[in-house]
Image (cartoon, rainbow, N blue to C red; front, top):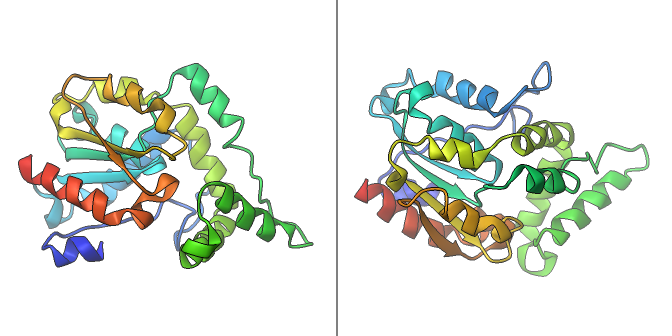
Length: 229
């Protein structure tokens, strides 16, 4: 956001419910559309969104963006969609992924063991402490805070058919996918690129943490893309 601002672009980054400084949902969200309609309801009345927006989402955020890009539901609110780590998986692949990325592995424990589990999990995901200590520390605190809400959004993610959602986008040329070879979703990146003939796919660095570890690479592609739109 700092780099986008310096380049003259306004940007907005809402917390997902239960993440960051936001309150937890009163009940488990039923589906991805619940998150998308929440964002649409919050931002569409603002003057800055009179002409819609260019949505950029990372992992779960890319899934929410895929729903927001549905013109029939949201009336062209999303002028373009950039998915950092798109999750275009078959039903069988989503079921397989849910077996690894759904269980609340860091449920609070009186012993405090959940803190060490979170620290180790993030290193397993690619945040090596020697090179990325500040990000690792921040992500550990965020993951600990959102231990339950992470499971809520992931449940919705693994039930959502991104391929079907993206096929409903009236102009596939306004969809850009970015992914790193060491991102957990890289094995499915070709599936994203095959959804529509106009979809673009570009390679990043930064693994599962591209917005932190390759922000310059993302911005170079993102700004060029939205300027073309």
